[in-house]
Length: 249
Length: 249
DNA sequence: CAGGTTTCTGCGTTTTTTTGCAGGAATACC
DNA sequence: GGTATTCCTGCAAAAAAACGCAGAAACCTG
Image 1 (cartoon, chains in turn red, yellow, green, orange):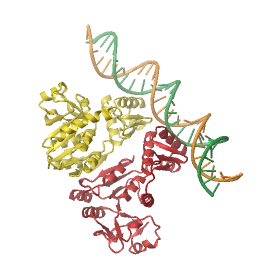
Image 2: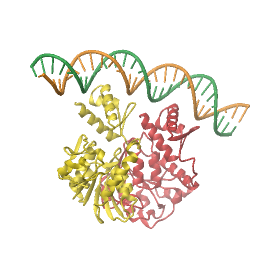
Image 3: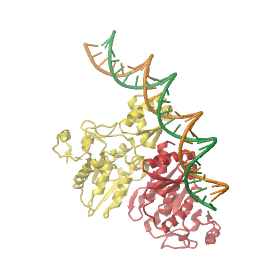
Image 4: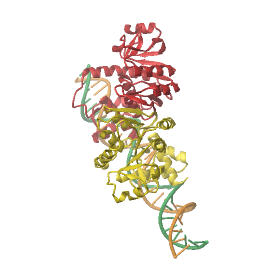
């Protein structure tokens, strides 16, 4: 990995998470802690970041403190993202939906991971594009402005042509009885196609959305292979899903 | 292998993978590391790539790469955008390439305009999405990280299926003798398809790029219907294009 | 076509950059 | 106050770059 490349990655991480720990960076990128420190030093001298004991902060950070609930659910999503990443192997073809949980997954992907990611969500695609070793395939069609995702028959047809190894599905609502449900008809059509095409479907959901129902049905529990939440697999809230045969992580 | 040939290959590799290692290049092309280094040096001096220790990176790494021409050429591009907008009518289907000039066009679009815009460029699409009355169609395929545009046979096939009223083409280089030329092979393929599909092709170019040539040919002057620059149509710099039958605005 | 000039390329040497490591100093945490 | 990180300094090894040079190829030019 080139020095500039590494610094670009660090800078991206800082801007994304508002802070980085040099200790975690050096295991991620697999270089010595000294190298990270020198990188942070240089970036700091260029005014790109603020170096502090143990890591660095984003420049915009020290200005305003942001709402606690945002950070709170961000941490939950980070846990989910970590679990999801453990399911990814080098060389995989991975289809993902949109949504903030998937965004967090995209941000958390380790830099040395080599895989191909496919999506129709613009914000998620932008995130994938920042990663050094990831191939990005964009599903094209008409853009739904409110969900910022491509929707329509062309997109669905394209999804049906591929056979990804994994499909990560961000969920709006999941319930033991009604399965996965959503509130946007076009997005639901897309998700149905994604589930149908993929070898393995992994559903990402924060606990808050468990046992909630939305008007339009995406699929039943039998069609998903794994459910990932920020909770421990043994949590009583998840029991009904385990009983229904879903692998809970 | 000729020097120019070698440099074109290197440039292509950089545009494709966003980075190259001089060590891997010299085994690929089978020349000494010194030669590669000199090539990278030259390409870097021409502003095509960014040379770093151990290899080279594409320009997309440090976004803010044009400090001088930035705000300066922004005004020029705004003039071009205004002229381009005068050619748009409500209800049109408009295909656009990527690039900063097109970005400026996207930003300048009047809010009441109702039209359908089609593109494969991520930054441009983001801009279109902010407009209230514009339908956005995204061309999907593999994303070229450095040009931030979808490239590949799927994208080209999709473009060939449509018949837009207008095509706005951002140009890297235009010359009376060689026509429109560019330096990224995949982007050229895309532009060729765009020109072929469209009823009317309008070429946007800042004066700085007039009478410059890049290695790969996109099309001759006869294939474009209109050329828009920030200059007055009567400017002597544009005379050769008027003589060649291009409508200059 | 002969002779001269320029350009290109590879090789050996020197210089610079990068990176990791060790030991002591500074800092944070309990 | 004690302990554990983290930070800094100097140093050394490896990699890469720069430099000078020389042979070869290409290219004028009369």
